[in-house]
Image 1 (tube, rainbow, N blue to C red):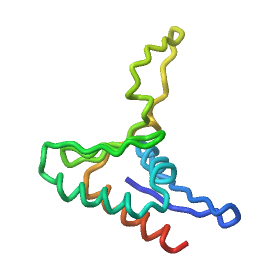
Image 2: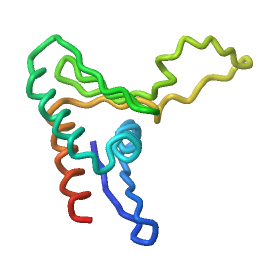
Image 3: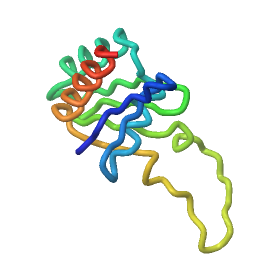
Image 4: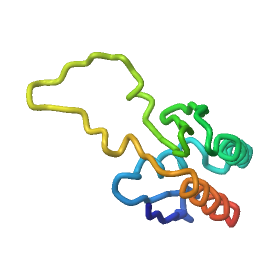
Length: 122
């Protein structure tokens, strides 16, 4: 999982650009975590508690949810949990590629620490 963090100095906004298949991680960092160090601390604590465990922990956000389970971190758009049976026209499907990302605890924790170090500088 490759990523790059950027800050727009004119607007003061943060951006997280992730490799293909992990785009949801970037959206989650920017939209749900930002500079919330308390959330970051809670997540790191939960990762430590869940290593080699079968239990699950969720952090539900406004648009995206983090699920920690089976030594993996899953970020998923909340609308994917919806039971809305919206039907699409024939030969059409929802584009979910940028709405869900999965990685191991170790990579996730390193990424979270790198994000924290990045936003702390600004």
